[in-house]
Image (spheres, rainbow over the protein chains, first blue to last red):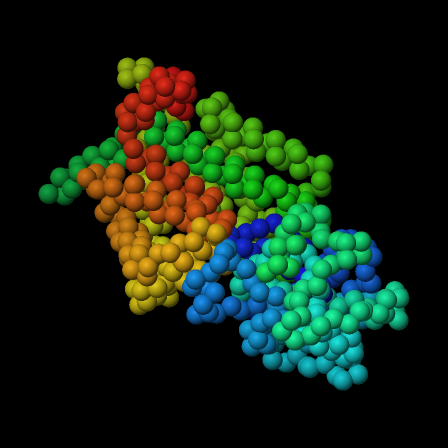
Length: 214
Length: 299
């Protein structure tokens, strides 16, 4: 799932940004990746509180979304600032800041981000959960569901967080996903099922619907 | 000759601390407090996230790594209404000039707490408020002059605050022009800033409609106003034009940049200091006559 900073911290700061955006900016500037595990832990708690129906979060990836000023939608914009869905951006414009995982009840950094410490080791193949790969593939095809501010995008460079719930076999049995069209005709963000994955209570329903139309 | 220099210095010192009409400063205090209330009130919409452990807060170690001083502790939920009430009472004391000094100290400590409890959500506006309330709380008090029938204050206090505004503008302009802001090197810098993550619907409309030369003119106009602030705001003949231009600049910022409007309000709150007490009295009389309102400090 793609989660924006508003779900983690709804308090806004200057521009269309929240505190996690500023945190991401400062941490990436000073290369302090040790901060992310506690951030991931907090995010997992928020997800469990806001979406009690979903499986517990076991992995968190933090991305920075970069939007070029030279793009035409920047210079002649249709409306206020909005960051496009994370996986609609080219991979160069969404560097991964951190990848954290819950291991033995403790959140640890699996891989430092592209702006991380040079000494951090890359993940071993055995550590790679097949689920992220599957989810990334789904994401590339535009099938990653978004929650928490789906219609209220943040400013860039901003933090975007992908939370990866536990594999289906771990705790919760998940119904097979219906096949969705792929390619240009595929919707970027399919409508969210209201009961299992509602929008956070602080965001009006119309905000979430607005994103679907865009 | 040395005696003459000393005499001149003494005269200058006397001029600096001579009592002047306090009405501009009273209007400034009220405007500044309103802007501070607006800023803190805005954050209060998310008080649980902002002031309590419910939200994501930096630990002491994380704050140290990020280069901040140790954060102050968050408060339990039952304390938040008391905090809010203290803020309102202190603001009321300052604005009504009843227990003003105590109110200023309370506002100072609130500004310090707001800064230190959550560094990630604070801005330049709050830092400015800390400095202003420290100055006002420790500065010379207001005295009633029976002969002139008005409140008076030492010229030094409003003088320092006016100098603060001029220095802020000058430093902002200098940074934009010469310290990496690149506003002199590129004609579209302002347009790029407005198009970025601050962009409101109004800004988007302006970006679609206005030709490039309007943005370039606005960019250089801003630089002229800011870098030239020591001249425009100090010289009496240009002061009223500078105030008008400054109001235009801040209204533009408030309309086009998301969540920067309160900072604009804070900056415009300095402007009453540059208007004479007599002008404020005239305005007060006009308001009393037309709306039944009273200006702060009038008795």
